[in-house]
Image (cartoon, rainbow, N blue to C red; front, top):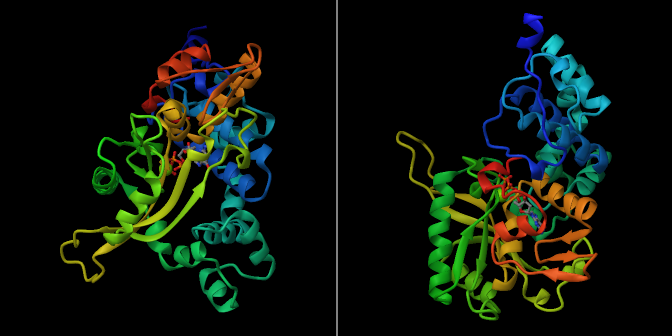
Length: 366
Ligand code: DGT
Ligand code: MG
């Protein structure tokens, strides 16, 4: 009876947006394994499987201590048969054959290498693999015509696959703030994405730009980008009008302003201090930077939507739809029962509309 009492049982709510998930992960071995299977599924056009593994990993990330036995997991949400089998294998044997064989598989490795090129998605990578292209060398030799994004991606491959540090994110923030102040005094820059959640490294740096006077954000993106280009900070840029009609997030569609929501995918040229004793002659590195401009009326939704994590976002939308009959997007929150939009000027208000306890960014690391 004493032994039984020592087994810590865990309990967590079903939706990731009901949980507080910090960066402290007591089950990294298990979550890394499940994340690898999720990644493999996502790269193989099996989105449903990918989400299932991501949800299972997120439940383990939210636990207050390490899992030592399967019995501790009884009653936890989102742990399907497949995920439980992987967890069991790792707890009992130290590793999962499925995970290890996926990790070693030529197909997975090739998908990783090729989708590691900025501008190359899983479909393109799959097509190239079918032609026998598994490496960057084979791709270069294949004579395939690459689009502008892919050319930049290949050119800066090593830099773009090297994690961005917090210090580098801060240096880029200074540049973006300088650009915005130069072209639109009064406009505001907010660091979003993983760095807002407190991550120490990232694959890119994400920014949200707005102006406190509605309408003054119009035309801002092209001015900011022109300034950055003229100062030599951009190695690549492509601005897209993020019209709601084109996006895939759901039916929420504010009556106006949609055409003002702009996004620019860029590659920054960031000056680097030379490492002492380094033989390198290159004094800069390439960094992926995402710029998004939002009108102030949608800022809270954009901030919530661009802070992540991706699973946290997905779970917020699932909660809104399934539990509240609402449609949440990065632009608005629509209440299907009341047939109206809910206004919000802060993330706190959006959580309140959704009937959720506020979760600060540092606890959205699901
Ligand atoms: P990482 O990999 O260190 O950059 O991690 P995150 O969390 O910064 O991930 P990232 O940069 O891919 O995306 C940041 C957040 O932005 C993510 O949680 C969801 C959101 N997001 C990314 N792409 C889109 C998009 O195309 N539309 C909208 N509405 N949101 C997006
Ligand atoms: Mg990011």
